[in-house]
Image 1 (cartoon, rainbow, N blue to C red):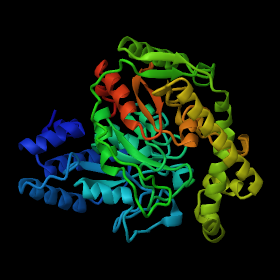
Image 2 (image 1 turned 90 degrees about the vertical axis):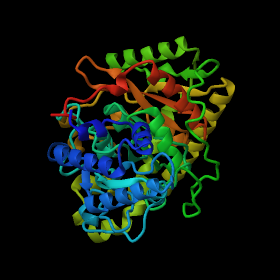
Image 3 (image 1 turned 135 degrees about the vertical axis):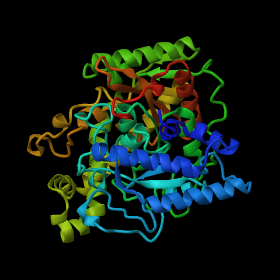
Image 4 (image 1 turned 45 degrees about the horizontal axis):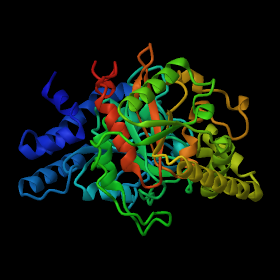
Length: 474
């Protein structure tokens, strides 16, 4: 293995430690990541734009600061990728669409500002589905199987982290778009509590459902990234006024006394394939062996989530794009335009009914956690492994109103977007064909630390996160 490949295999925690003991430099880490981008991009297409000169200049600055004793924290000098729906001052931001072709923002999204403040090096902008709801051109490929769907809509973020062309990445999650690529790519993805991370400067899909969060290769790396980007932002009307703890504190305390619920009727229903069900049951058994109490629960209101979330998403997306659809409709891809235009025919009464249904669901979820004294709910992240790309390219005329090609396997991730609770996806194993499987934990609002504690305990008991995809190294 070359020196650069050895560097990109480091976790964020390992790279940060190496920087501080003089074992490497930010420039070396950045050059290694840029070399991986050059090596993998012709096949994987994870990046929309890579401002290499800016990244190297930032790395040089980080090295000078660290040498002078100025340490901004664990992300200082670490190369990170950011989803292309996040505004970046002076850097192309097209959100996967010809509608914004050539657009260069004059300010940074708050999440980008916070990464800069933490000393992170911005490697580039990772590809996303068009406005987070359409397809991707050129198509981003899965490092695990080039014929498989790499997850959406934070496709580039998941692929870049897996391919070692970033040490960690930022994604967004409106209906699972952090957790799905995490599950499909054998990563850790956190959708924190709604409002925990500012969405200011992020092109919205549906503002009352949108979340911003990290994708990483380990649980501790994820906790470090969330700590850097979380916090109240007066520029975001939906930003929560909540203290930001050290999310890594207490991760090693074990699971004794924690209560983890499983709602089998909804999350382990017949549509869950055998390999995913078996992997999830194995995780549950392991957590129980480590001291957690596993509680069988029932929540009929889960059946509300799909129709409710789709209605809210369609209405809010249509509202945001209504002017651009009129003026630049020909520049949208046909699939994206059709999805957005369907939202324009929804009645205000339908949207208001969906908002009321969401409050009913939130109340039911809160009551369940209180009644059973739960610390988390566990489930598969998605009920199937990564489908073939050809299977998700279902003709739109064969779909129901508001349906997307991936609705079948986002059944499990919708609830946490609707309730706003934190939810994490982490590696649970592999199918017989070698495709990653993820499990999901949903927690109490603003209790991401407990989800990290559970996921870290399981991570230490197995080596799933250490496995490379077949296309990481040729």
